[in-house]
Amino acid sequence: MQNEQISVFDIFKIGIGPSSSHTLGPWRAAQQFTASLKKQGLLNEVEQVKILLYGSLAKTGKGHGTDIAILLGLAGGDPVTFDVNAIDSTVEEIKTSQKLLLGGEKKIDFSYIDDLIFLFTESLPFHPNAVTFQAFLNTGKAFSETYYSIGGGFVVKEGENGSEKEQVDLPFPVQKASELLHWCLSTGLKVSEVVLENEAAWRPEAETKKGILQHFQVIKECIYRGCHTGGFLPGGLNVARRASALNKRLINGQTYTDYDSWVAAIRNGGNGFNYILDWVSCFALAVNEENAAFGRVVTAPTNGAAGVIPAVLQYFIAFCDGYDEEKIIHFIACASEVGSIFKKGATISAAMGGCQAEIGVSSAMAAAALTECLGGSQRQVLMAAEIAMEHHLGLTCDPIGGLVQIPCIERNTMGAIKAITASQLALQSNPDKAKVSLDAVVNTMWETALDMNSKYKETSDGGLATNIPLSLPEC
Image 1 (cartoon, rainbow, N blue to C red):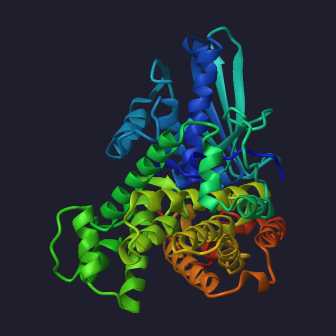
Image 2 (image 1 turned 60 degrees about the vertical axis):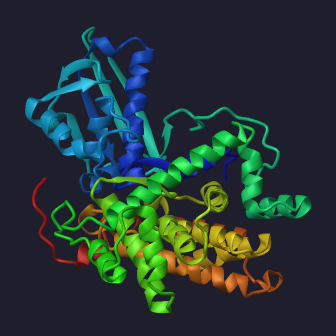
């Protein structure tokens, strides 16, 4: 589709839940808009700001926290560092005071009811996730920009190509899986090693590895926090958090004090099939319950699918002797390359492709990474990714109440388990006899996305969203 240079840090981003396309993307768009105002020297001339939300951002925006993300972004907050415990109080202050500190500098009047507009029946042609920011100046003029949140936290400003980084000469340019395989076979490099060689075109290898481990630190903290936090998720569905109770039952009275001793306790608990399966589900539930509760997560490659790769990585750590920094770096690097191939050849946006573009892609990424780390060949790595996606084709996105809760949270457990199964199948198979290539399944996913009815693309206009009779409180 498009010639993109995608880094591991484009596929994996640190942010705040519940959605990469509806929370992180709009947050980044709001930041970019205020940056544009500053660059144009217009920030201090702004008297009023209006925000117009289109398409999927309008239809499921409140359930996905789009309104919250935009307010925080306009006010100068950053999703990587903003205190998640201060989200509710900050947004409430903006609503009640009807004041907004634009860009963290210029205080303006702001009405949540009148100035944040959900255009439920209007869409823009480029992408279903569109937002227009309008700034009205004291000179009588107006300044406007439109942004598209195209999935995974990626943002494109209207009129631009969406490339946010410096274009470099990559030693191993890859647009398709066949090209990746060519480089692997001609050099003998693993998929993760190709990735690290390419990353070196942007920054020193030590810096890349440090950044990946910083992302892993967020993943660790998210899993651990999710496994030790009970209660109910926000949003009105009254969904009970399950990871904490499941963790307590599985740990079976063993004592621990931190992540490391917790992992040791998990290992000591046993190695039976049911035990491992339950833990994988627990890990995935933990991350996506945190995501649904506006916690800090790593987009992998989206927030709605943020639990799949952490769950499989945690499985590798706890049950496959994978608690080693170099192994973890290679796991994440390998996963990122598969995610980038899907983004280049199809989409990682549920608003464009349904949930196959989120859970399906994340499952393929996890399957590939696990296969490489368990000693699989390059062909087996790509085979595992293909198997995982093949069995997610056509998966719809139909969140109840527009919230990233039902069926999203449980779907992460399914994606993680399918990834492990796909890896095991690939490791026990001869990839030369495979009938379907990864490129073929990427193309098929994109064709399926184009054919899919729009009501199954993160609009909450069909599927479970319309067949479960729930009464949600007015926002």
